[in-house]
Length: 288
Ligand code: FAQ
Image 1 (cartoon, rainbow, N blue to C red):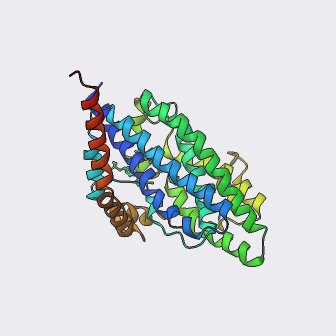
Image 2: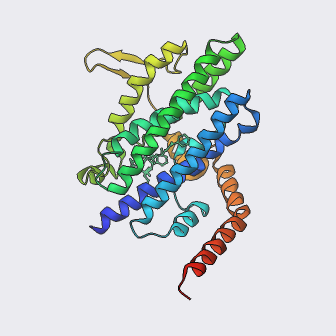
Image 3: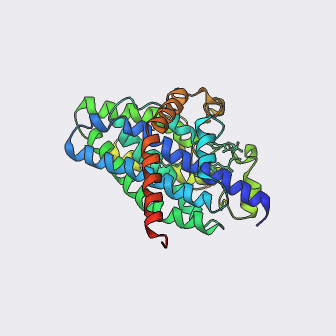
């Protein structure tokens, strides 16, 4: 395996794993405030799924000869990236619908292509993750559609969530192709089967009719259907905002890292107990 191929995979898979784990925080924030028992159970299961995704992905990264502790340390020190989208706050219950519909929807578009990536352990992790995220997306759509068809206040709450999450979701696909330093190399090795702009456009084409079906408006006065190409065209994305967020200057970057560091510290005794239990079992199995 060429060293660059290995390095690129470790970078991408570990950033993806960190995104799943940090991605638990904005939604976890609403578990105790979900509006009904049914919604609480659904959200709890979704957040647990994200933890599972993080674990499969750390395990896939470990097949490339890196140590999980090294990856976790890079996240906690702020050296590693994770998806820009998780640096925005969840201000209302409708945000949980918007995350499921938009953020999981975008993740599925990206990850169904990654299920065909050239590195087997990553591709196989993607198959299972996409199956689960499809369910998350439907759950989010159903939450938003219910609010949109509810009282005027509920409809306004759903619209406000979509207004805030739309543009950051489009940024999830990464910078425009001409400003994406990694795409050419990743595509040559079929690590990344499709470039950023093509996936972003595919997502927009799917999201526009879904927003219309829910009676919600996308916050873009320049959004129009281009007959010639057969695709929806948006107004300009604020790439300055994207760069600010990935440099650490988004609305929630500091809180997210602080919450991860706290959780890591508070979980120390669990890791120690698991290690002690594993050592005890290994000793019991060892020939006397
Ligand atoms: N945020 O040259 P490119 C999820 C960085 S999972 C932060 O275009 P590449 C599930 C990029 O790393 C979401 N940084 O990079 C869920 C690079 O920096 P570096 C995560 C970003 O790798 C749902 C630099 O910019 N998914 O949401 C972002 O060719 C709900 C230049 O960019 C994955 O990680 C960004 N948005 O393409 C969980 C999928 N975009 O490392 C909970 C796997 C770019 O050189 C709740 N990854 N950057 O310093 C990928 O498909 C690719 O890595 C891209 C970026 C498309 C993200």
